[in-house]
Amino acid sequence: MKRLQHILLTTAAVFSVLPCGLSTRAAETHSVAMYPAAPLTARDKKQMADEVKQGQDAADQVAKQLKLVDDKPTQTRIDQIGDRLSAVVNAQAFPAEYGNDRVFPFTWHFHIVKDKAVNAFSLPGGQIYVNTGLLKIVRSDDELAGVIAHEMTHSAHHHIQSLSHEQSKMSSEMLAGMLVAIFAHVPARDLSNLVEGAQLAQLGIMNTRYSQTAERDADHGGTILMHQAGFDAVGMLTFMERLGDFENSGPQVTLGILQDHPEAAERVSLITQELKDLNVPVTVSAVRHVTNAPHALAHPAAGGGQDIVYVNRSLPTLADPDGSRALAIVTQFNTLLDGGLQLYQIAARGPSVLLSERPLLTITPADVALHPGETPESLAAASAKALRSGLYAQNFPDAMGAAK
Image (cartoon, rainbow, N blue to C red; front, side, top):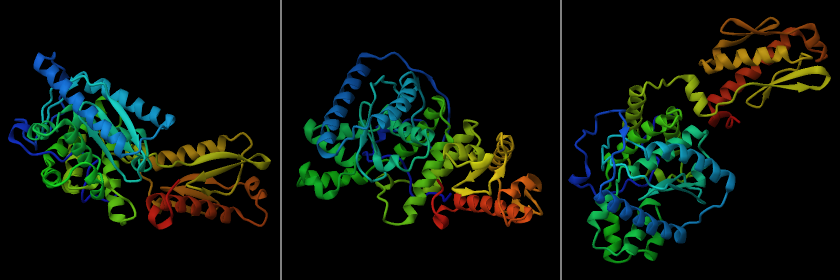
């Protein structure tokens, strides 16, 4: 995977950078410590109520400006992921590199926005939005959990409080509109519906004076949060790398979430370090798991045979009435695949297919009987070719078509 040039999963990174918004914890320090939430003081309760109201006002603007989707299966998927994350974030605190780590037990709301842009954003008080365009490119619940956990960290660490404080003289309706314009990347042509004149200029300033520290904190906190909730945190890394691939592929993909963020090399490096701190190994097997990488499968064929299929490539049908032979072959192949199998390690030698010099399958006379005109050697060569072609297609989808 390519390393990102610009990164992140959110639009809630455009805050006025105020000294009071930064924690005393150095941005370059990495800690995975979490600790129980402290009881809320009267001041905390007031601030929580203010954030919830601010978020609801902005959510009302979202409902007017963007099209929300009522898709029950997808909504259920997002809600289930969000519920696992919220059970952690509402009960435990983790150090903030921006904002503060005071735990407010928000009632979290997860929304789907019908928009092809690869985007997600959060609003104050527990309002989380994910675009349909983003949902199309996440490959697993672990990757989606990384996106949502990142957004939840923005809310949980109160990143927009500095922005809200600076704009306190605005009306609630105006501030809500501006938050939506910033967080949801409302196109410039539509901003006239929200702001005009001096407010439009002010919005431009706010939109560029964001805090990269807040983005780093959302990476840091989101990685810890998803790990604590039982997701594979490698998904945070693989999704970010894929964003870089899409960004570099050309203008055909709109990446709202890749605006004005720190350099990719830095982001990927920090997340990699976070994974090390969490003792989460970034292995070939882990990457394949969180990206739902394809495996070989066996299917019954006519005449009591078995077809082995890998990335839409079929090996010659094998004579295998009970399927035990095909099962052993796909189990061995998939195990080596998850261990980092390379193209050069797949070879045909005589009637056998070898993986790393170990026999995977040997063509039998019964196999040949299913393929008139073929020989054991030709069937072995065809099998090795199908496996190499599938592995190449999986590793280089741009060259041979996306792996299914």
